[in-house]
Picture (spheres, rainbow, N blue to C red):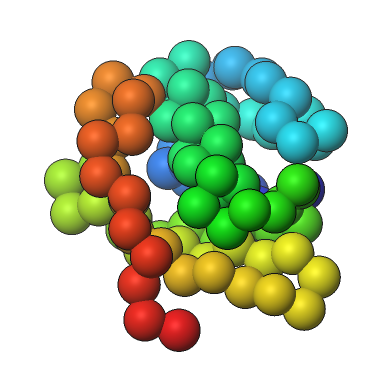
Length: 97
Ligand SMILES: [Zn+2]
């Protein structure tokens, strides 16, 4: 799976040294909370979309405003908004195509 940031896969921070494999890809994260949030977000994407896997995610936004994202699988894409608290997804909804 691809993600858009070159820093932490969730927040783009370049500090930290935490790695976790999500959807078969070893991602860099600034901390375990971002890794939890990212992993739980991907789970939510799969649950809501019904996809068995996710090819890529594109994330924008931040912790306080929440994040607007686009997930893709082949020709399909799903736009969504999510927030997390301590790595747990507290809000997740599909947004306009
Ligand atoms: Zn982070």
